[in-house]
Image (tube, rainbow, N blue to C red):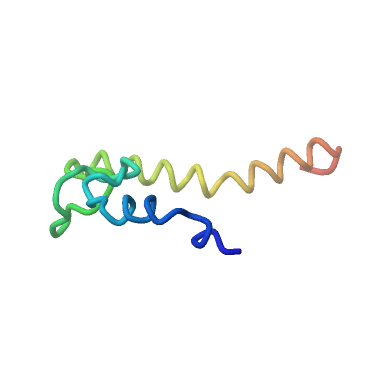
Length: 80
């Protein structure tokens, strides 16, 4: 039996009456209308600060596999 068939008609009516404002969002986007260049969950008004943070995150994420390899080689007593 499908989950939809098991729900009561009253609960389906309540679900259909909900407006988009009643639906809870995930909190990633502000509650303003999406317009051009305002659809990101963060701001990058200060471009230098954004570039430094982006480069730092990219370097960190890129280096994680290499750090893991070095750790595993040292743990097993291999060359490194």
